[in-house]
Length: 161
Image (cartoon, rainbow, N blue to C red; front, side):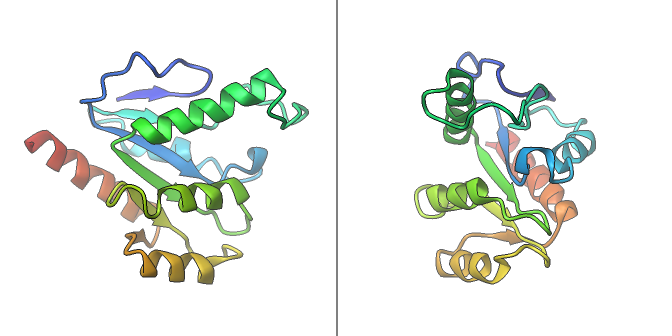
């Protein structure tokens, strides 16, 4: 497995390789590091994993389009979301995750079967997420273990193509 985090350049990657973008709750470090847990559980697979949780993130950075560091982070995430074979989006209980909700909206109707949402009990807008996913036939996982199984299944199918 290859794990890519910002600011690592993604443009040189092979789009024919199976890749997964780990979208979802980060909340500037307040959310649990569920991405690292999934990395560990999937390390036996030959795939590219795009993890937007930046190791050197500084919460004092101004979140403005004029800030080149912030702009580079957002552009990295947008490019990774576009290029990934699969987007899994985890909305951690106890978080509000407004950017993750924006990403749900971006991919809910544009690319069928590319987005899998996991919104466990305890996420503040679980009802809204459940209804929207149901309306647009977006698959939902019940927990991180099911997300892991979905990634493994999709990876297996990708290899057979």
